[in-house]
Length: 281
Image (cartoon, rainbow, N blue to C red):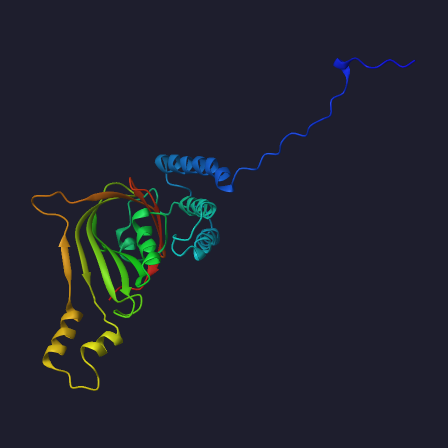
């Protein structure tokens, strides 16, 4: 006669453990990025980073960075995972440390640089405004350094091309320029002291020109004066003066060579990726 097993010894049905969803890729990258950044900073503080990287390796890293930002609309359309991958590619270029152990080469910094990507909120808000306001267009954004014959600083101009559809020429109907003096504080840090905000280079559309001075009618003195005024218009607002302190900020130039400039805004946050551009006229 078979005996029944005691209840305490009866085998209970196994219940499979509840599956856990893997953490997002961006969360997996964050610890690695933090460690990598700290190692780069420690190496830069102790000595120049090794220049042993081959020219081919340098160009490969730069190419991978530019390829990573291609479809981001200068950062506005980048998602969290994409931003994490771009940050990793930025750090890979920063590790090259071009000139990290030497003073900032102002002659190489001098010139015009075109923005390819940023994560800075004060720039992304421009792209967001263009997305929400159908008639507003934001064209190319440049940073122009004037410091070729200087040893400790110079002038930097942030140039934003913008337009209003049907009133101004597409993308480059007007220019917003924010000018600042900069002072070199250390090998890679500069201090910006903003001086003036200006709107200039108004280029009205053909439709608006036709409205002001129709081609089928003789142009009057008044219509010509209006066209001339718009072409030479410049509105400027000083942001510094004897009774108010000029706003300023720290800017860390983390990488510089003949055709690429990487910068980080200290305090405000955000990374900037620029490539060399033709001089502005």
